[in-house]
Length: 453
Image 1: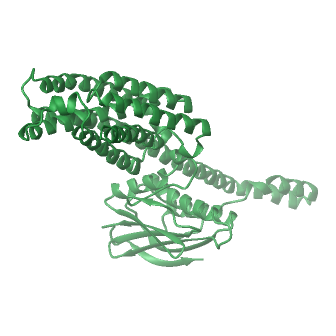
Image 2: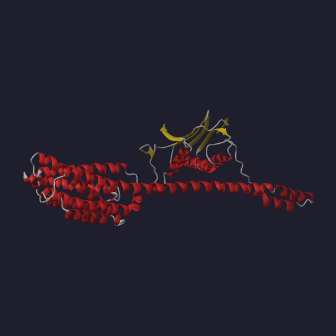
Image 3: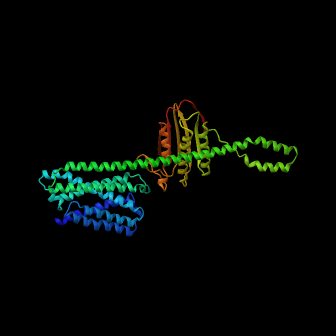
């Protein structure tokens, strides 16, 4: 029976280290790129150190020395596999093992009262010896940790490169948890030996409350930093869109200045014609011919800024062999400012063009429909797709290689729409992607004028 119990303890201890590597696969390690040497190092860490941890449990429920050695050994293995960002690697390992220790204490404190009611001595049957009761408590703590790690891996939306910015906060959080573990070890030891009154329920509750506060404050600070960074990127993207619009405006102003000079050029040409100086007339025509390439922007919506964006995005699409279809209404006013129109339409149309560019054999097309029903304005942009984009929690996941630098176009558009109390949503069906921006209470100043194919 002792052999079976030891085998169970070894499985539990190996499982504990395996869970740690599952967390590392979801954060800093690339499982698919592991070499044979790396895998051997990981499995050696799991099996050999797992067996030694199990042996230690036959003598003691919890050892702070084993906790420190576990952090050191696993941290060393991870740093040998991935030599970059060693502090981050060690910080995540510290965070994991300190949380396992917290859960060990929690299940121990929680079980004290019930074991005493059953007449089972906690010190003799759990703290200083290996029994099935101890194995059940250790299994329960690691089961809770396993569920937390799996949930974290599924919900974690931070890109691995972004984690680098959180190295020191993760280290600080881990150190605070280790200090808490050290403090509550004295509580557990004192209650187990009878030196302190058994108040397992209070100790367990206060432990979880204290750890929860540390985690909530830390996560809150990280989320606040992430939101601030995201807002900076969105602002930068909007500025880039506005700079693009300003460059176009400058070019148009230059063209108008050239056209304004046509009268002066006409007088010179007329003088050469009267003198029958054909050679000079020809040279002058050659000289000024490149100055009159005026850009004629068709009036589609009646809103000059929106027409400007639609015109240049149409040219870009046609250069990439993308069919452009436009059905619009005339708009005398819009709920957005000029810079917001540029950012909203520029981002949405950029996404549509990029989606069409990724298509290989199928027909590429973009359809823009702008219509009004009473006081509701709908801007609907549809485009062909080769395969449906991935979704997570109602949000699209970028298919580009560097996801850190992409995905902000849609976020920027959503921010603008929601700023004006509108709604932005998308649908995917029949090999096409459609995104719709809806604005409410826009007034009664628009009327349908037609369509452009």
